[in-house]
Length: 448
Image (cartoon, rainbow, N blue to C red; front, side):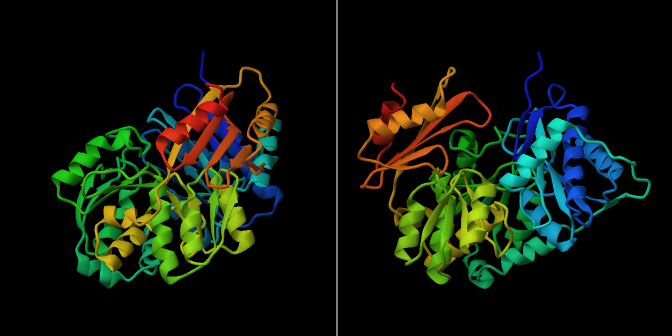
C-alpha cells in the first residue's frame, strides 16, 4: 500500500515513486496557480529545486502546470531556499515554488510555496490553498502564451546582502579555517563564494548538489559525527553544516563538539544585539536563551506558534529586527523573510572576529539550558482534553495556549505539549537547567 503524502498549509512532502506522483504535483500546483489568479497576483513564478535527483522531473511537472494557468515561469534550477525570497522581489514575481523535501530522507521530495512578498505562504493563504486542492482546480482556457525561461546568476544579490551585514575586513583578517558541509544539497552554490569572499580557508564536503547525501539529511549531532571528526582532522576553527535546501545551519566548534541547533540562533542574536538592538521573535519551541540575550540588550522577545510562517507574521506585526526558530533557522529581515543558513554563517564569523575567541568559549557566555523532546500516541484521545488535564496537574505553572499548551514555571522552566500536524501523536518538549530534569518533566507530563 502506498504511503500517505504529508500535505499541510506549509506545502507537501512524499516518497518519490510511491505517494509522490505527477497527478499529486499537478493537482497541488493547480490549486496554487488558481489561488494566484483569483488574487490577481501579477508577475512570473520563480521555480527552483534543492538538488535531489527527482527534482528536475518534478520541476518539469510544476512548470507545465503553471504555464497551463497562464503563469510565466522563471526557472533557476538548483537554488538555496533563502535565495528564493530574494529572487521573488528582484524579479517582481507573483510567487515561487521550491521543489524540496528539506531535511527528509533522499527518497522524499516535495514543494514549498511562496507569495509576492518573498516569504512562505502564511497560515490563511495555506488554508485557502488546501481548500482549493481538495476541491480540484483546472484552467478554464489553457494558456497558449505563457513560457518558461532560464534564470541565471541567482545568488549574486543574496551574496551582497549578506556581506553588507558585517565588517567584512575584520573577518578577512581573522583568516578562519572553515569546514563547510553542504551534504550534496543546494547550499554550496552560495556558501562557497560567500566564505571565499570573507577570506576563509575552506574545506568543503558534499559540494556537488546532486542529492546523494553522505549522511542523513537533518543536521543533528548524531548525523554529524563524521563531520565533527573532519573538523578536528582539518584543524578548522568552525564547521558549518547545512540541510539540503540550506535554510538551516548547525555548528561544530574547533574541538569537534556540536553545541546544539539552538545555538545557531542564539549566537546570531548575541552578535546582532551588541551593535543593533531590536526586538526579536522566536517560536514557542525555541530555547529561552533568546529571552536572556534580548533582556541583556534591553529588548523584548516575543513568541509565535511553531512554523516559519508564524514567526514571520509576528516579526512583521511587532517590527522585530530579527527572528528565527531553534532548529538552526535564523531570519534576518535585512536579507529576507525566510530562514537562512548563510545569515548564520556571516553573523557567527563576525562574532568570532570581533571577540577573537574560539566558538566554544563564546558559547559558554550564554546561560545554558537543556531541551528534551518526547512523544506518545494519541490513540483516539482528544489532544485538547489531554492538555487541559496537564493544566490541572501543574497548577503552579502559567498556561499559554498559543500553540497547543505551553506551561511556564516561575524559575523559567517550560513544557510544550502539542498535537502533531502530520501524525496521531502528542509531542512534548521541555527545557530546564539539566537534561535529567527536562526528561523527567516530559515523562511526568506524558504519564511514563
